[in-house]
Image 1: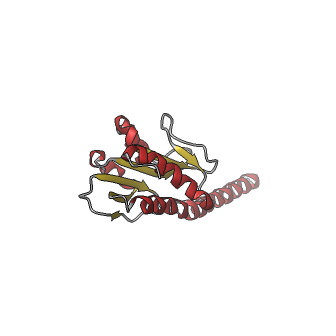
Image 2: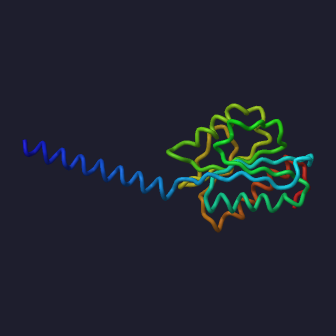
Image 3: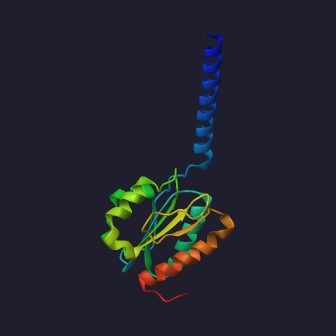
Length: 172
């Protein structure tokens, strides 16, 4: 009986340690919710939607894209990826989705949205970040990389090049 009690105590200690690790990981590495905002007037012909998650890296990429296009008569709307199910893609000329790879898959809102709008893939630009930097949804021409803050301008440039083709703006 003593062996069983020892085993049970060790098992419980491991489970508690694992639970504490999960809480720590969630607290340190979970993405923040992005407060929605708009730039410019919705009466502009060109409309860009950026659906993102909140982190220092993703915020820097988002602000780089917004700063680039805000002077080009482009209406820009920034929302959290959790609102993707409510988005009417027909209202926008281009959509940028910036998300992280979580638990070996994309967030469900991103995956569902992209699968639902495959016919509009020519106006969707996806940036997927992951620890390794190469994970992406199968069949999606995504830009991939690690969330390294000093590399954010490189990703901004890649996204802007794709958006310029979609929005038919001159290459800057």
